[in-house]
Length: 159
Image (cartoon, rainbow, N blue to C red; front, side, top):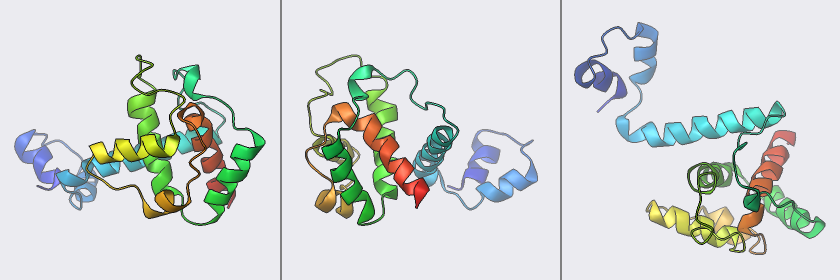
C-alpha cells in the first residue's frame, strides 16, 4: 500500500498538505523501514558534522578510541569502496541495540564488530554487504563501534 493512501484511508489524515501527499505517493509502506534507516543515519551524520554527539546517552563500553593500528585497518577498508551500506547498518546497530543495551552479556564489548554486525543483519534476514564481508577488518571490537562509525563518517565526508 502506498503511504499516502495509508494516511488518507487507514489513519484518516485528510488534512495532510497536498505537496506532502504527492511526495509520499512514491513510497510504499514496505519502504518505511529503509526510509527511516536512511533519514536517521543522515541526521546523525549531520549532527556529527555540527560537532554534536548523536549517541549522547550511549554507554562508555562502546566508545573505546581507535589506536593507530585500528585507524590504519579502517582506512584500508574505507579507501577500497563504498561505505554507505556499512554506515547505515552500523548506525542502526548503534541506535537500536548498543545505545539501549543494559545487559553487558547481550552485546559484549570484546566481541568482534564484524561478527556482531553479521549476526545483527542475519536477525533481519539480510546478508552482510559484500564489501564488508570481504574487506572489513576482523580485529576491530564492538567496544570501538562508535569510534569506527565516526571515523568512517569523517572519511566519507572528507572524500
